[in-house]
Length: 231
Length: 388
Image 1 (cartoon, rainbow over the protein chains, first blue to last red):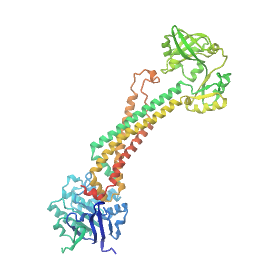
Image 2: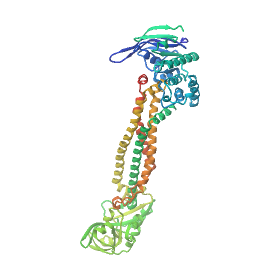
Image 3: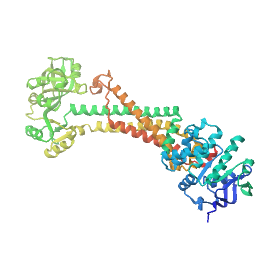
Image 4: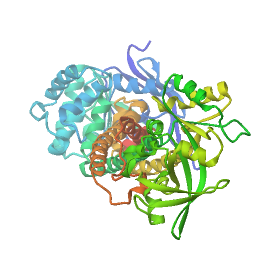
């Protein structure tokens, strides 16, 4: 049934505000394949981040359903949502949101510790992932001792450490210069290909979007374009 | 347990505020322990001095009678009861003592000094002369230091006692006692037989003092004597019921102040936690995105309140202990009769006070942490993440 699609979105609507209502999402239908590397683009206020937050189960829709690996996440209890976010989803935001009082390694260990994995095992796994993003020699640095690009790499490592099936990125390179952006993009692409994980990125950067498998264009909360890239 | 890890890192990241809020708790706990130690000391001195300076049970005549007749049998009977150490019969009368132009009212007690000494150690309070000198059935009197001063008399002087219902009689002062309590002004002792003769009432007494090995068993035994013999037996507990109730009431009042003091220190904890929560909004959002449950978020901040509170409690206990010891070692220059003959501030260091103050402080601090912790746990992860 859902073998092919990791995410199936049906008629998703999100309305904000109780006085003046704003339709952030207006009947979105979207299927995303396993291992797909997808970009969501659109002007400000088009509902990109809102859609991403629905997929990330950080928010609940007004109506419609989202099946993640065949399970409707909109019906989940708060506790179940937390567990699903921890096990199946990885998040990368524009700002890295690393815990400033923990070093790189400890930050990457955090999702594993939250899921209840033993500290020694978490340390081992986190080290491997940090090495994969090229920060083997920066593990005991705190976020304020690392550059913007390095911090974003730590954030990527943290998003991947639980081996989630879907990685969500909201403008993951928005705070970085073009060289660092390219590097981060290369890294994400490489990880996507190696682990066959699904990546969904919201971006303003058309250059970056063009290098993905598919571009979803949102306008006023509706899908206005859905095009496969040839590369 | 990553919650504890996050909590300790948060606290460590705000060293100065952490220090101040811990000091606030420590001071509150310390001050309250000193308070409690002094209250305990005061209470136990009051009770000890009551137990030591009064008969544990006083047996008085039956209802409507003035005297206990044929008291020797009753004396022996009570002496044989379990837990009784000594019995002293007395004849009590009001009198006015007169010396030259001075006159003072007094409660005159006719006693057998040997028996009396066994019930209440009068000998140890003697300022001059010997209590045992009253064993001689002559006209001898022992009075209090204050009374001697008021009458302006010394050892060997002769005072005249005006006793209602009997004529005046002269007594020679063979002893002066000093307890440091109001007793020094109102009690005087003479020989029992001498007072009975003088009164012309025959061999009767007006009361009997009983000393027990366990003062706290007095209430039960007093009831037993009461029931068994029909005489009116009153324990020291019943006799001092008002003071004991007053002590309990004041203890209750003091708790009200404890709550206020602890609340002030609790606000310190709440303050630093509210600050941390505000500063860490994005971090809380990210922790939620990573799958931290709302319960765990709540736990993180409650742990922070608990750690700050616990540290404060430990330091406060040490502080309170040291200060209590220091206060106990100070001699105070107050006149001893004002404070039951004390020359030190009464301080009693009791483990239960430390436990009470500690648990009390910890509970209030954790309550103080509930508000910020709830606020953190109720955050909308999306708003929290995008607030940065």
